[in-house]
Image (cartoon, rainbow, N blue to C red):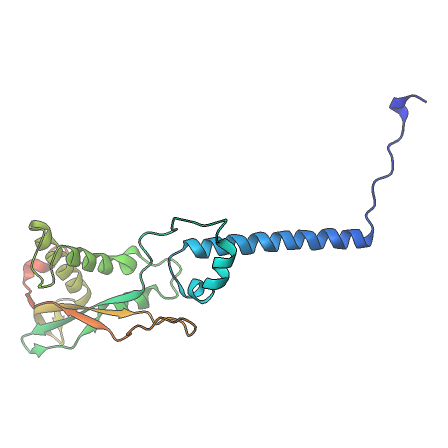
Length: 214
């Protein structure tokens, strides 16, 4: 019989103890890799409740061999909620504050495909206004400041309509309510969660403000 006709040898058969050892080693390596990557992620992420609670353990894993001098996110994620509210004045009198942001959130909740307008339109409009005005609500960007005022007012009027209780709207006022998100129980941070209000002045409303609105 030539070498080409030689039959292959029997396949290696691992004993049960060997399989147990190999499986345990694989699980240990996988667990260690996940823990290490998670520690590096938390160390590089902006300060948060988890990293603050386990800061000593994270430092023990990362420092000094695996020190990171960069961060994952810039800027840090927002840690407060901003609601935009409005109230109107009609020929019959002045109304109460209406939370426009709460209406948007209600439209988003449990909606698998929420609209872009419900998610971002009002928030972006307020950011546009806030970025083009100073603390006294004076414009700082010329015509862009005027555009921001008109944009914000028309969005509010689109949500509110032309009349309240049958009385036409003659003026509208807006404000923001900023509230810090409460930290989890294990966090050492203490923040005031009461909303802080930024109230604008009354803006007159005319038919021209409704042109093009649906």
